[in-house]
Image (cartoon, rainbow, N blue to C red; front, side):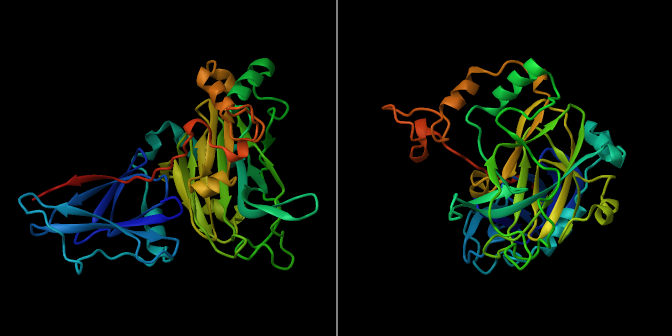
Length: 386
């Protein structure tokens, strides 16, 4: 699932969602369920059919890949293991039909939301919220002659670049030397703009007449600098890719969980949309689906000092620059371990470290077995009730 969403279903059985990414939710019973890369969910399944074998099946969502399915078998106790009939397969939505999944998403609510320390983010006055509206776009990187040479993804027209030195090390050093919050940008980074780079109907192609066009602004290490206890809201605004396609993006935050307070179609409008937020019992999670041509708003308390990546969990999008970092009171954490220095030595940025033999051309070599892994998992708690 590096580029796709998956829909899971079990023939002849419903699933009751009871937990999402560590958060117990009010139970919601579904016939099938969509999972974006990085998301996890627990479901109860009641074995209420006659003894036998039943297909558990996944299909591809949000990309048209006909015939690509994954299968497992649910076998009742006392039944002989056998392949179920190919006629007895679960039903799934069409690859581009997301309405049922959105309805389910909107039904999911946190159980006893007010009991969480993070619930302060739901009751704070709107004037005390640090709000960012962040646009995700596909862009062309151009040279000094205006010739395109690289396809990138960007947030508010900044494509994320991994720093040559690990961000946590730089943040800790500067915070200790200069205090926190800094009165200047963190060395080697740029502050992520709070607002969209331009006004446009983001459901339309950016190359349209009067549109912002597809050229990239810059490639830099974009960050949001926060103070511990600060309440932050980030609204992710989707836009069409340069080929006109409308894509989904699963946004994943390291080090924190966030409340999914709202979503909607088309362009986000604070005056219109903030009053529609669910501030009573929204889902508390760490990976949210930004649906095609929509926006989604997440809110969290910056309660975990450190440097944390917030990125699209589609690996190709991530490595092409779709992300930014959250930096929270690095002066409150201990000295970084030796592994931080090791990460800097193994950087893939050109010229940032030498490879064997003294070459500094790091762009063509994956050094020392460096591997990028992305996992998508679904945890089933299966209650077999006879």
